[in-house]
Length: 320
Image 1 (cartoon, one colour):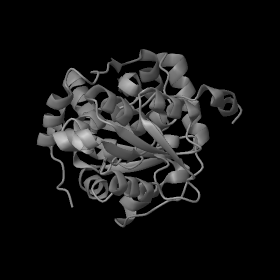
Image 2 (cartoon, rainbow, N blue to C red):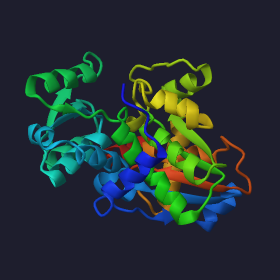
Image 3 (cartoon, helix red, strand yellow):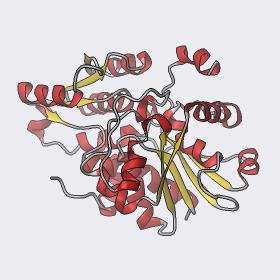
Image 4 (tube, one colour):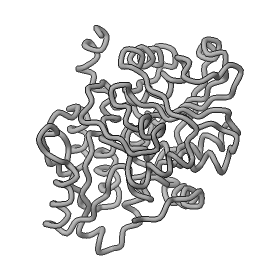
């Protein structure tokens, strides 16, 4: 098994991606602060290259391949944001990339992945196992498998988002962010332990896909099968063999929000911050603003993880 990434790995990743990944801005709002009774700092990873924090880990991982590995190419599996990130990072680095995507992935994410030059292989998420397809393609074509979250370079790369936030705003009392497979959460929690030791790191899932919440509380890895939720980026089956122990070690608590609360928060961010955030990207904000933790009077970081919205879904979301 790969060794755990450390704060030194997050520092190394920050150097590796410097000048390639965007150093995304931090947004604040007096109106939002008044509503929350706290001082909130929003790390805008919806403005990252490829529209999500995933570019950080993807570039960090791909840029560390050996010349022979880079020439043969990589394969990954993703419902969207990691797919786009690998496709774009591979385009920047001139590395062939094959992306296994569910046939029901948001079309905006599939089109973007293909637009970045990725070869998309579709599968039926109800009947097929994406990880097995990825392993098979890796064997058949000699590709290097780069999973979406359970990889030390991916985790370290994602942790650079929180690292930048602490650099820009200083110590925080809380840090909220989405949790799917746990790459962003574990990487950010590693950064928080090093840079703001008193910060409580909170991972947030959709209520329909609360496997990480259950895993965190039971200390046993729990799974979920294709949960029905608007937070498509958090429909992962479970935490990974690396991210699960990292979450147990570094994360303070977990929370879950239902879809109606999530969408209400997402539209609030659109209206008040003028930021287009996708449903998954609003998970951390939803938990912070809806009282998942007592944040009154505190300094609170929120990672807005992505902004790849399927606009064809908006009218349906407004009706929910």
